Image (cartoon, rainbow, N blue to C red):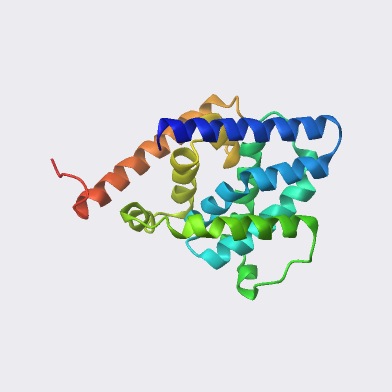
Length: 206
């Protein structure tokens, strides 16, 4: 990621955080939820595609995320960023898929404002997401869902360790122990990816 793009992304995220905080402050939770779904939706969808490894399942899961974010926004207390909270909601939705075969039935969600927003985000995001296929994605295909989640949150989405701890429900932003444990897991993951890259000839074995 270039410095210019990183700067644009950071500026966009700050704008989303401000919109959410302002809406919550005036008690307009629908506007706050809309800001979360529209502002963070494209990156959440990419995260779910990486974790679930199936575009259709990811879109089903994203629709559930949008509904849960819409209903759950009033529970956001502002102790963590809205972005970290959104990723936690997304991870909780994805976790249900691993525990429960409900997704195989491909239930149709009821029409709502949240589902309409989700559909708009998915429509605009598919073109960009479909272009992101490279050697790293092949390596990632062999990762567990937990590993996929950690990699996407920390590397692709550039969440801070504080935010990652919130997103994966290991602790709150001030939980030093959780952040240390996540760093250790991430180092093991980096070593695993490096081994895989060397095996594929993508890295020198020296």
